[in-house]
Length: 122
Image 1 (tube, rainbow, N blue to C red):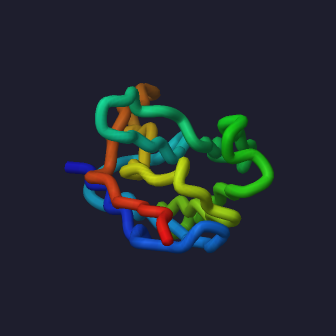
Image 2 (spheres, rainbow, N blue to C red):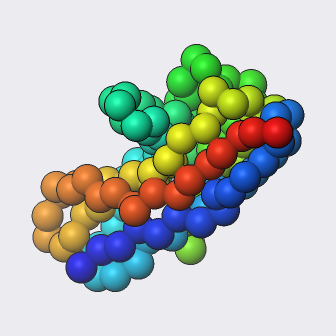
């Protein structure tokens, strides 16, 4: 089994910062791309940032210049540094990873974490 566990969410004031972490654990052979998504009740889950196995990154326009995604391949972890937070960033943030479950397969399966709440408010 593969598990993704997020941490680091919480309540922060506008203009503040948070750092989210996600660790992959369990039985698997490798991880390809990883990313962060967020969802507000009533809305679709949207992409925030992604990072490839080699470190190439993409960002949603709404977070460019404010958020930074990074990863530690040795620890099977991905991070999201969030700066200059605004109330529009309030959402449940989900970790995502493409996981290769066996060494003899080239297929990467999508996995999701349970989510961590980020609330930006005074």
